[in-house]
Length: 134
Image (tube, rainbow, N blue to C red; front, side):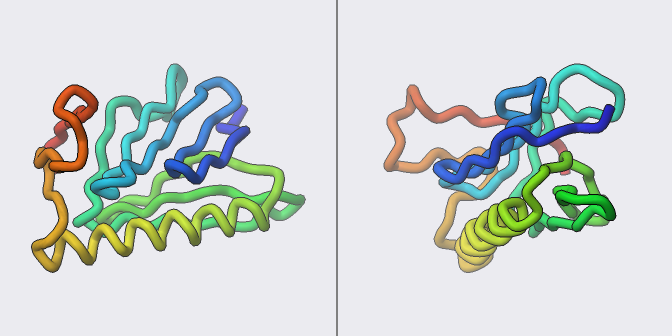
């Protein structure tokens, strides 16, 4: 069975699979994407994709009904799951990409946070930083 998206959250941006409550999370402060899809073949866990590498979400209609959510990162295309409501998935992807674009521009302009930097707005106890090699 493929990955079925059961939730599209927007504040903050995240998706939940039928068997994993929060499989993809977009950090609202940095734009970095954290992936933890749970147990199973072909699933990613503990992965961080950085906003300055310009990730993008795509909603691709399926032949029967619904759509599939894809994520491009560097030269890779990841299948994140399928959702029954194609229009809802397309809106979510577009809104998430708007956030990612704003974070990428802030980092490129040198005014946003970079990997591992803690934002002054967050108390130290609530900031969690994951690392991954690029």
